[in-house]
Every structure is written in C-alpha cells, then in structure tokens.
Image 1 (cartoon, one colour):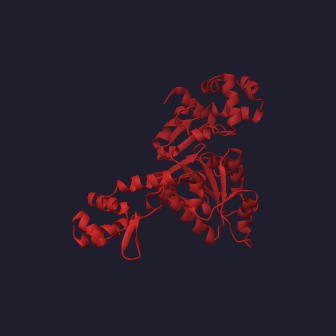
Image 2: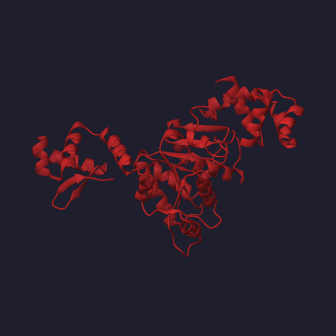
Image 3: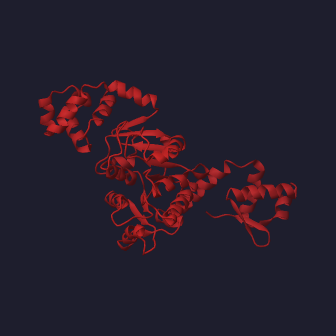
Length: 362
C-alpha cells in the first residue's frame, strides 16, 4: 500500500472529519502525511475548528501503520476517493466518503445495483414484498443494496441471497461491528457471499447520526431506490430524498391506506415516485428487460449439461411435446422427462396445456 494512502486512511479516522474538512486539509497541506506532521497552529489555519484541531492532534499520537495491519488481518479492503477502484457512481455525489471500507466480494461494487429500503418495524406484508422483490432482482443478475437494519433491510438482504444472489450491505458503524446483534449470521453470510461497505473507521459504534450519512451511500451506489414500507417520518424517506438529489430514480410500493407504515410510501407516490407492483416495473424504467433476459440466459446456460442445452435450444425454436423432443435428441422419454424437470426447476422453460413445453420469458 502506498505511503500517502496510509495517511489518508489515518486522516479519515479522526473523529469529526467529513468530506468538507478532509478536502480543506488536503488543499492546505497538499498531502495527508503533511497533516499528520503538522503543528496545531497550522491545522487551525486550515480548518478554523478548535475541536477538530484537538482531535487531529490526539490522532497524531497514533501509528497509522498499526491500523493498516488491523485492516489486513481482518481482510478488509480500503479505497480512497482518488483511486480507480472507488465506485464511480459514489464519486459523483455531493459529499462522497473520502475513504470506503469493503469486506467480501469487492467486484459487486461494479455490478448493476438497485437499493431497497423501508421500515424497521415492518409488517408481514412489507417483509414478504421485500423478500420477493429482492429475490427477483437478484435472480436477474441485479445486486440489491440495503442498510442491514431490522425489518425491510434485513428481508431485502435475505431475499437477495436466496439461490446465490448478491447483495451489498451499507453499514452505519465500523465494518467490524455487528449491528443489530440479531443480524450476526446474516452479516457473516453477506461478508462471504456479498459485500459489506462502510465509511466509518473500525470500532465505530452505531450512533444515531451515522444513519443519515449511511443513507446517502445506499442511494449513491444505486441506479434507483425502492421504498417498500415507511412511516411519514421514516429515515427511508431521507434515502429517497438523497436519491432525488443524486439524480437517481425513486420507486415506492403502494400500501394499506389505513397503515401508519404505508403513509410514507403512499405520500411518495402522490409526489411522483414510480409505483412498483412487480419487478418488471423496475426493469422497464431502466430498459433492462432485454439486457436482464440475456444475462439470465448466459448464467443459466453455463450450468447446463450438453443434453440439457440441446433440449433447451430445441424448445427455444417453438413449443414442443415430449415425443418431438425425444425424437430430435434421440434419447429415451424417461431421460427427456428428467431433463425437462431440471429445466423447469431452473426456471428456463414452462409447461403448456397439451403437454407442450416452451421457453420461459423472464
């Protein structure tokens, strides 16, 4: 790791440092190592904030290289704003995190991403919708982004992880802190199969003021934000507001007009948010149907045996019955039945009246 990057990471760990003060210090001292070695009077000239100056002076007593060693031991990747690997969508928001911590499949930061957010005290309906939409998005090769909170966030992650789907959890605390505690197993699964993301240094507790900051990253990483259930004062509405400010699309799932948990989403719809009653509403907004169809087929085709590919290609030409298929591929009907069952389980074909089979349109 380059020396200057190490000092940028150190600077980002100083209590009270945000995007604006980080930029001010870098413009004044030119390098993060310059801040580390700076005198108190010069730091004050740069930022004019006595409390933050004292925090920097205290942080100068720490060894930045010890912190890097901890990150490496925990298998946590770190990207600074200037690096090519830093998510490009996030670079373009108003106040991008100077440093981003990641643990898991870092390639997911380059995937097509949709955010899903909503109430912590979600209803059965909300949890059901979150899980279903997340599953259907991930089934189509789209990575689901959410915030690891109780309720809608958790069920969005769970739905996305079904059948080896992918999800990104953006945390409001240090990436080595489990919050909420009941999500310990979910967080471990995401770190293995998905991606954990945080702008907060190691050991940072889940303070209330962290979550609005987290929300701007959730929307900033995504093409659009789907709000599933939200009260009129829900933090999910703040995520929707960030999405609008960042030029992202906002979607809302309509809810029961007598439910307090749907007042926020129904209000978003009144204000012009796009209604979501199925995954197609999201795909169509971004003209993704054809791209997604192609991606699904590519992923599924790679998992087929040669006989399954031959049967599938034959069915793609036109609906076929078992006798036609057996005659074409020259294998026993019992074997054809097994292949057809496998293709249906994978969601690639469907059965029609009259015992014919056709390609399934996703």
